[in-house]
Length: 101
Figure 1 (cartoon, helix red, strand yellow):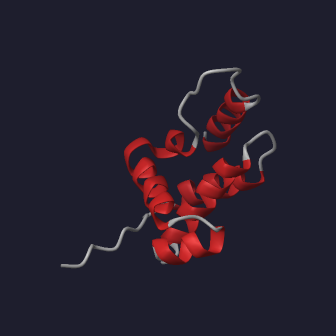
Figure 2: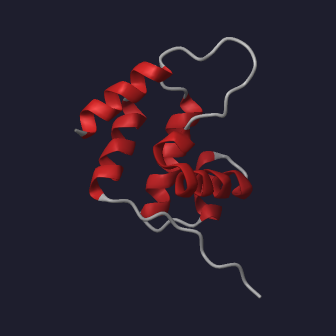
């Protein structure tokens, strides 16, 4: 029994938002990479090809896709961790929200 292909379907607006996020300052590289993984999935790349391109494990790509499907844009960011909060996250989310309006 084979596993069904896992793929992201993005609207034109979502694709533009993810592209904007890839070049935004103050965003962690791993968040930008998740955005790129979603855009590649939307373009038909398989999780295995995305993993090879980004130097990730396939499970990491699948997790990024599942988080997008469950949480949307907010799924791109890391879950809260103990310690000092990352700088710029709130500002970036505000700027993205204003851009979408």
